[in-house]
Length: 445
Image (cartoon, rainbow, N blue to C red):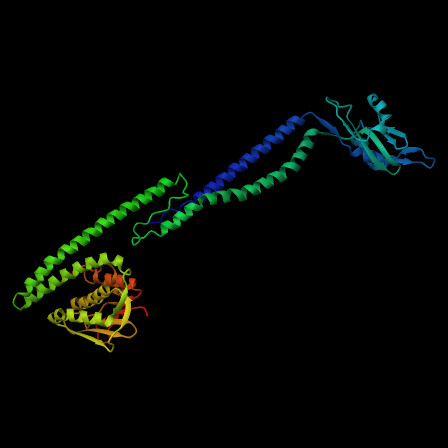
């Protein structure tokens, strides 16, 4: 089943916050510009550029008199502004003017020596009293010019000024927003990333593990608490399950031992051998169930272990059963001792399970051989039908059987694999050169 691709909550938050921030900035900008336009509506100003045009058009004749030269730019200015006029006063007190000078400015023109800068606005149309005063320089010298040239709306000036001021500010705010909002959101989600990594460490072998609750946002805390509660219930259920298996295995050992003792009193014969075999399988199953419980403590009490001695003990214990089932069981080694660090009881059960597996599945004839070499390798070979290549990994899975109706619970080889891994080694299956299977136990060192 294909799961739909999940959407990123972090990206959604960042996108929504950025859109919200952009909307706020846009709304503020529009409102601010609208206010400025409304404030400047109906107001016009005189363009002071004409004062420079006037200064460049004023020339001084050889006799010293000032004259106004109709330059090209002055002509164009007259054409654009029909009510163009100005009065210019030199630094020597000379006055030259053109156009229809309003009477209200006649007196002011005579006192331009006291004024060097000014903007005079007219409140109502036709704005006849608009004027500016500037101190400018031209070919004939320095002049203070009073007059009126081109006019422009205050709204245009406001828009131009607002763009010059607002655009850089808005760009700066947008950049800050794009950088800061993802950083803030990522910082808020950082603790959730830690929790996610901690959740990846949850494993059946790490019982008692809980997700951290410190620094978790209040909105996410119910989810973390729910997960921790589920882990708590799983631990409790697993503990009850393990306790039941342990109790059942212990309860089985005594009646099975009694059964084996009573069967041994029966006269020799096929029925006695079959009953002993069945009782042995029940006893082995009980031991395997106990081994499942012992796996958790393997590694805590490693000590020096002699692999040669372990194999000798297994060969001695399993020889009667092997012979009764039609096999010859032998131990081959040129070593007196082979010491490694491990759990003696667990390693003995490993070799025991391998030998018992050979007794059950090698066809009831041939040799079962235990070999030890100095490379810390134990091999158990038989001369049975062998194990198909495609099944050699699966036989170590719990409850797996080569044939559905075979005897056994399918736990023995899985326990072998688990115990070997806890000792830093591994188990593998190959072909026996003489036919059959070869189980190879490889230990570190």
